[in-house]
Image (cartoon, rainbow, N blue to C red; front, side, top):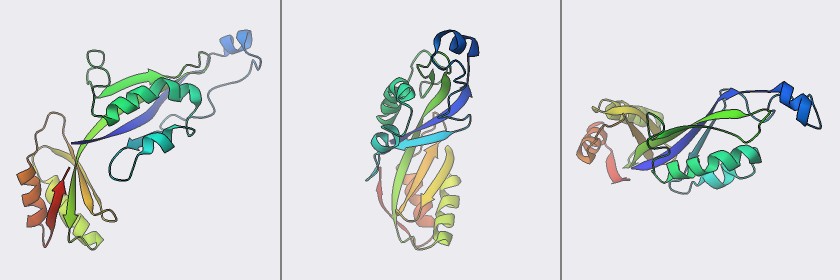
Length: 181
């Protein structure tokens, strides 16, 4: 099983009364860096390690300081917040800015990588995606034709057997499963 981390900005607050009382610029306003609905995907698979270049320097330092440990934990497949949230793969956190905090939803995305030989076009990718989506317990599938693999995202708690994945891919046409990670 592989892991990605999805970070979504779900809210922003602005406490103008605190800004007027305590800040050098009393009309600083809400955080200019993030917008509600912004999404960031972090991954560490193959040659990708977006934790380092998507995180460091690409996010507000105050926010990164608060959320990076949860992102790192998710990328390692760990429990982000066991016993605190109703799903240990998810955490709600906010940045340190006391006058204009940004609230983030941090989710661990679990997936299986299937390296496939024989995919040559989008039609191949579509056939493979359709076959994999038909497996019981599969939530979604993304086929990356340029990389030569499919990412299968299971439903929470679902068990997906390698034999089912191989049968689906190889039954969709002249394709061979090279490896499953």
